[in-house]
Amino acid sequence: MNYYELKSIYNQNKLDEALAAYPQMIEEYKDNEEEIRKLAFLAADFAHTEALALLFESGVSPSVTDKYAFTLLHHLAREEESRRCLKPVGAVAAALEFLLDHKVSYLRKDENENMICYHYAARNATAEFIETLAKRGAKLNIADKDGNTGIHIACEYAGNALWDAELAKRKAERTKKNHEERMASAKERNLSDEETRDYIQTSLDDKQDAHSEYENQLALVENFFRTVKAFAEGGVDIDEKNAYGQTALDIAVKKGAKKIAAFLAGTLAGEDDAAIAAGGMTLHQAVERADIEAVKTIAATGADLNAVKDAPKHNFGGYTPLAIACAFIDYKTAETLLGCGSDPSFRDGDGRMAAAYFFLGETNAFSHAEEGIVREKDAAKTIRALTGAGFDINQTVDDDSDTLLILACAARGRWPKEDVLEELLRHNLDLNHANRFGITALMYACTRNFDGMENLQIALLEGGADVSPADQNGDTALHYAVRNDNKTGAKVLCDMLLEFGANADSVNNEGKTALDIAVEQDNEPLVKLLLGKI
Picture (cartoon, rainbow, N blue to C red):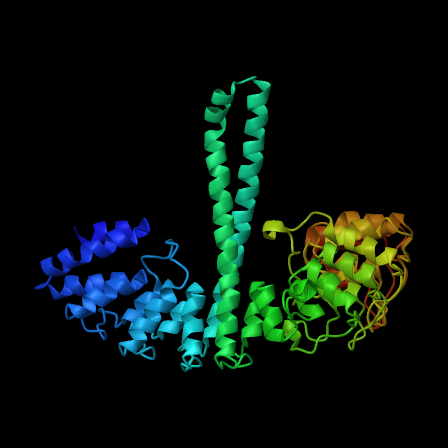
């Protein structure tokens, strides 16, 4: 028997057969140190204590390492060959105890990733490994090269396990549905019992395999929780920060490891469903993750729904939960917050209402839609939710006296601008409100990128927007339009304003008419148009 045949036997969970093969293989490889070492690494990988005992008796040193300086404990923790093999409960603990009793160092770092064996155990959620070390009083607080403790590492990889569990769940649901459809088809075809068994066998096997895979993934997720708990009970500081300033809780929240996060936050008592639902998050964090379940749970505890986040600006510092939902154009979360009692007219420390954050370009992001795709009309739905909760569509939303209409017209780009404007124009808008600089929605509509602005300008004019007001610099909408970067667009916009009664002779505070500016812009077609109106 060779190494690969032995590994195959292990993967079939035939431990007795594997053990029986060792004496012959040890004898066969007695003059081949490399092959003997490979057997030791394989036995450690599969947590086969009896095989390790035979190898040690034959002269293999417990301190043996491979070319990457992986010790036998590294191999036990890494499970490189045996990850998909279901080991008997207690096998890892027994092998670990055996190796520790034979003075194998658990503190040695490898030369591959410069990690201690229990860092790999944290990565693989080998809870037995950490629990056993903790019981023996091992030093578990050594960090990796990035300052990550075992808890940090477990939290990071728990997120991957959760995602894999979600995929396995979807597959289980899909194969269950396929099997049910196959059963129904067999019934419709009036197949005999024997024919039905043959007809549905593949779908039944797929269903059972998918369910088993899902159960295994759920068990892995739970093992990550056990791993984190074992590290904490072993004396690792749960509040320690890594080289990037992150605590394990920060990572758990980011990765959606809610049960772990609740434990690290100190809110978990037993299998507390509410604490797990909240996932150790603040309300702001729950909103950022678009976790509706957590938002509802945290709101029900009496959390301040209008509190501003204490964090740097780039991390939504100063935002209310509702402002974050609006910044993400996250209709479902915004609706949930409003349903829980968030005030849509609350002003934060910067004097802004949540609706103003639709258009803050430095933080605006795609909505939390399935598969990362923006849900069509979410901006419009969010506005309806805001107005349904008492938001006055014509009220000013910031300290500059901007209305939502003014901000939408001032915004660059097409999204969410077009969706917001489409919804706003359904309402009875004050089209002539000017902000504290004297700028109206029409003025902004005339100066922004021409693509898409022509129809907006027409909608505002047909709705009754006044073409005569001037801003604090004396500029009218005509002055704004003539400055449009698109020369063709400038002519089209000015022509429409003149059609609705704009005064071509109006001068601004610098004494300039629209014609003067058109000459400066070297826009000959526009100059010709304006000359014809004087």
